[in-house]
Image (cartoon, rainbow, N blue to C red; front, side):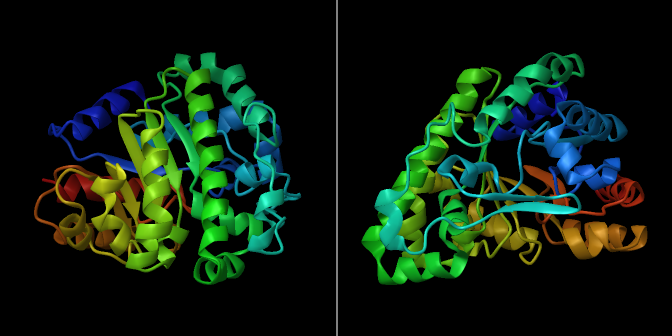
Length: 345
């Protein structure tokens, strides 16, 4: 994020009002390489191309709050790599990590990663160190420590169906796995902050927490996410969950979250009623079908609908109901920004 945008975000966290309605997007490798015109492998393997692509994004749209901004990542391989997962990289699609657990009974044999040395994590840190001066010279800083959430990582390591079955059939083993992953996430977030003292935000991405019911959420999600969001003492505590988010939304305050990106399937007012007024909402037009696949007119209509869903525009960052998907064109981003200005008057 541009330094002025970061300061404005802190104002929103403190409950202050801005003299404009901000627009922002979560951007990473699903969108940036294709938009910049390079392969995903080029994006992941070249620090120079990674930097140029991110600089082009922030300079092409200077009024957008790109979050987390200059995200050093390797897609869904990032966290599983530290546990020893085999990684598959393809030039025209996102990478994936193969499962390393055949069942929850294998959790005791799962290594506890060293976040300073294991998998792709050292390369992520070094990419930021090598480019930190250029990032700072562009009026940005490294602001967020980032990780996928424990339930999401669990599904990478053993499969979604297998993990969901384990929650029901082996609660004790599931807690062992979630604790081990949570220990890893806390270590990883703290190491990022130690490497970059400018960090005062945490971004956690986890859709699987939206797949469970109230009882399971209280048992298997709440205690681990609460610990994760408190471990660095970050002022901005940002959660992305664009699966079903109604249960998540009503527990955000207790979990420690103050910035929430949620599914476009939920209206702005529905989520606001559940979160209360303290949480900043990031949303809420359909990312794939409208922002990527729609016309500028359809983007305008979706923004108008989102504005009409809620009476107070306080503590809202207008965005997509999810991250920036592949194939979003400049013309639709400009249409989005124009619509936010138009409907906020």
